[in-house]
Image 1 (cartoon, one colour):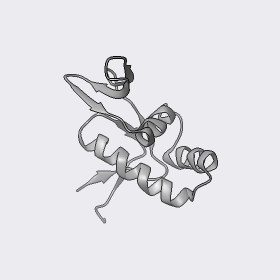
Image 2 (cartoon, rainbow, N blue to C red):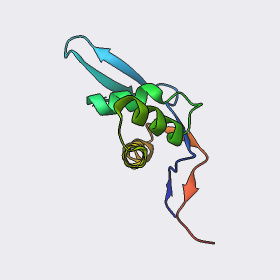
Image 3 (cartoon, one colour):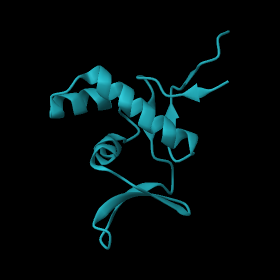
Image 4 (cartoon, rainbow, N blue to C red):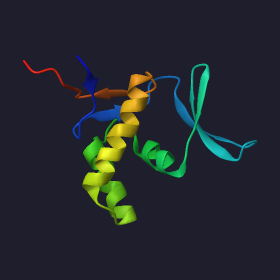
Length: 102
């Protein structure tokens, strides 16, 4: 059984995980215990909206309005990106969906 994010999932950064601006590299990174991940501008924009209150659908809608882009395309990209973090246990979420059929 694989568990993943859906448009209704509400992502959050767990305790000890945060977005940080590294002054030496002059870039934003995602810091997690004993790990750091470089963030491109798209990932940074998504993670700035991950607050534990907004759903992925709301995050994608916000980004689509700001960048005048197709919400469905953005939503799929956000789900893919955040699923990668979820699988590495760098992201938490509520309202997850299972792909296993009853």
